[in-house]
Amino acid sequence: MADAVNDGLREREWFVTGRGLPELFSDTFTFSDPQVSLVGIEPYCRQVRRLFDQKTARCEVVCCSATAPNTITVVWRNSGKVSLGPLGVELKPYVVTTTLKTDPADGLLVSQEDAFASDGPGLLLWQVPALRGLAGPPAPSVEELRAKCDFATCVLRAA
Image 1: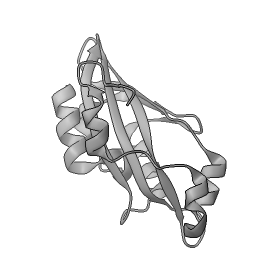
Image 2: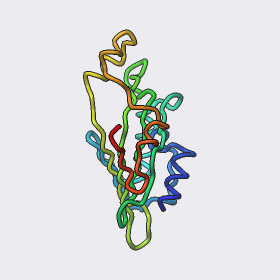
Image 3: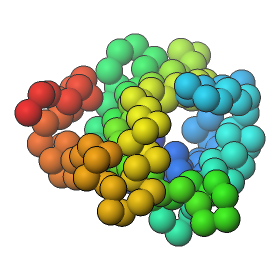
């Protein structure tokens, strides 16, 4: 399943496009992050399509591995815009750790939990190009992140 998720995310970037692969998901699939909880793959995909600007949003996979029984960890770099307000809001690129749980009986994905550090002031400063230096650095490039990654655990080593 980890290989199917990895291949699907690299091709479809469904964490930001909503172009998921329904055949990988259980009918009881749930999603949660610090702001949202959803039930079902279709509502999840619709919400993702609405939230992220489809022209600019990127989900760049750093690591996707089976890290424990019935657990797939995905570390990815989120960037682009979200569809808030008339012009959208450009995200300061950041790293997300997604934990996917699989059903031990059929192997399908039953839950997704996203974890990330939110930087409200940095996000606001990022909206004004002249102030971006005050926002702190964006997440490193996906290549730099991969160079720091333990691919067995999807843990990023300190520089």
